[in-house]
Image (cartoon, one colour):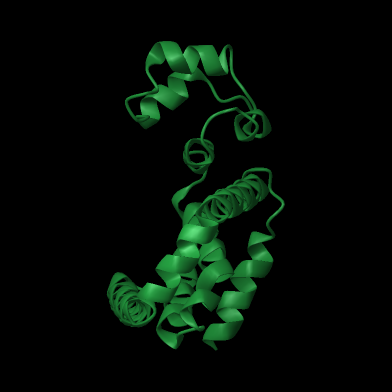
Length: 180
């Protein structure tokens, strides 16, 4: 499968990606793996790859990514449930109302977590500021490296969906089995 300039331009890339820039990057077309390896920001590679997925697979990929970080919420049941409902929705086993309710609950969880983090940050601001000044450069480098590792993992998972390495039938069965 080759991804062409015309396809990318139909998807509506952000302003830095003019027709000329996309032609420079893509030439006569690139495979998904070649797109994944381009020397452009990882979020732009991910955007291009997710445009190759249908709505169901894009939703399932989003669930995979959410599941990989749900521990950051303390495995808040509202977030776990939202992922489960979204997977069910992808397979036609949940309706839009059910999805909306789960989404609202997950947003409330995120809001709760944000305010808790703000309160904790305020309580330790002075100590954190002193430590941050001492280690700022190393922290930024570490954070940047971690961000790139995360993007690389998301891109690799998108390629799994594109290249058919995700067993959709088994995934559907796990969702259907959970619903019974």
